[in-house]
Amino acid sequence: MAQAPDGPRRCPRRPRPSSARARAPHRNSKMQAPMEHRWSPYADNGGTCLGVAGNDFCVLAADTRLSTGYSILTRDCSKVTQLTDKCVIASCGMKSDAITLHKHMKARIVMYEHKHRRQPSVCAIAQMLSTMLYGKRFFPYYTFNVLCGVDDEGVGAVYHYDAIGSFERAPYTTSGSGSALVLSVLDCQLQKGNQPNAAKTAPNKAEVVELCKDVLSSVGERDIYTGDWGEIFIIDAGGVTTTRFELRQD
Image (tube, rainbow, N blue to C red; front, top):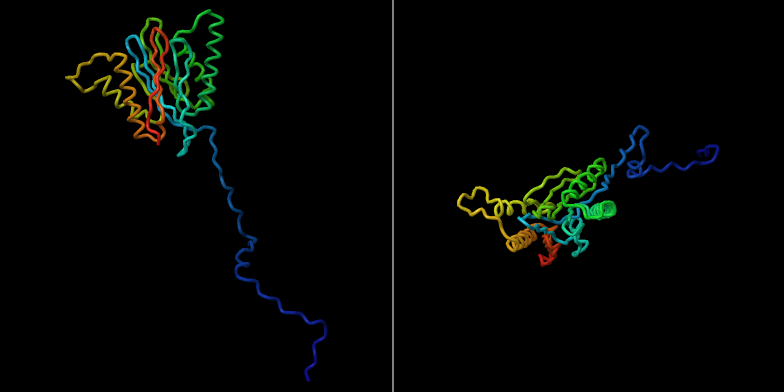
């Protein structure tokens, strides 16, 4: 008979499953590279605005939709703020920055009124806005502004701005997500370029208002960030008059 070996009997080690061996780290394996998460302090809330200057008036139009991505946050949010009796501003881009900018502008205008005992002119407000935007050029307001009003001579004035304060006075301008669609129509109807047989007469106030309504309505059919309601601000020697009209709701 075979004699049993001395000492305790040892059970054979079971082999590790292949899946466990695959999950086991290798001593020479490298660590996974860290995942990069991007974050931006800015957001574009969409919308479109436009301004048209006349001989003795100015018209500013803007929609009221506020959205982010494919979500509509609210359908009734005005992009326009009245600064004085003869000056209004519309801002597209980031709504929170626009609110802050308009609040600071109104505070500066109140300081001007206390010092000079009168309201600032449209030209003075235009230069002040440029200085304020340029002062924030290293962390700018993400707003694209259109300033409209009537100057000291009673002539309509429209100013267009970029985000860091570069501006120009123009007979008409536009800003926002649908600006490319607006500007082509305004060029055709107001400038009448390459139309040698067209009568190049300045439109009156009623014609400009109807043109702004038609332009915003057509943009609302093509741009998903423009819609719901349109606001028309008419600035003349008598002050500021406001009207609203309905745009596409979806």
